[in-house]
Length: 115
Length: 120
Image (cartoon, rainbow over all chains, first blue to last red; front, side, top):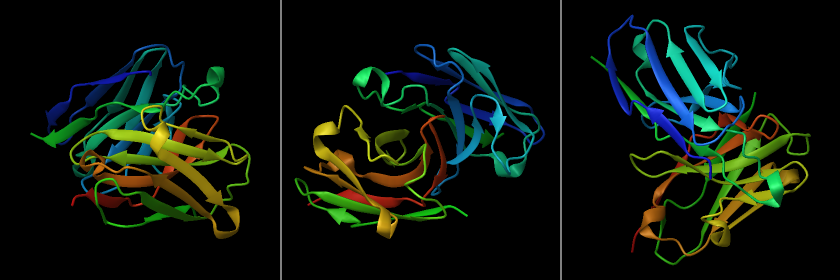
């Protein structure tokens, strides 16, 4: 399996801060990296796909970058509604590769809290 | 507008089989590149992908759970069904279904999730 490691696991920040979350893959995943936001009791919401493409309707203060094994999610100016848990997910390991199923894997999450 | 909704039991006993249904609208599971996936989240834990079924009826499972999972689709009803045999307390989780794009590996629309508790 491709392991996804996020850092930090938790983060305290203030309104208006610029925040960066990193995600590292255990092997190259090219640009097949997606970011999700999850609030308590809710389903995850897709924010960024293909490492840097903003999903429709997502505010432009969210941005993503990276390729290969190292990726970042940046929030340029934190708003109250941004306090949530963020997950990266690799979409590179397709079930069709080599005739075997290797799973789509998620990072362990980064909880963003108000300082 | 794409929507998905999970349904099924909220409580199952250990060793029982869980059957969950995902009812969706706003897309066709006959469309190229489209799939419906199941993903779960144990309380306070990260997300875990379980299975996916594709437009061409191809099906794939998490290797660690493969022997316990079956996924199927009913195009006429716009439904995807997941069964999981031999449920254990550690299978207690919120189970989500999600619209999936094979070419990019993303999950762009999710159901609200359904909490399944495994307890005697």
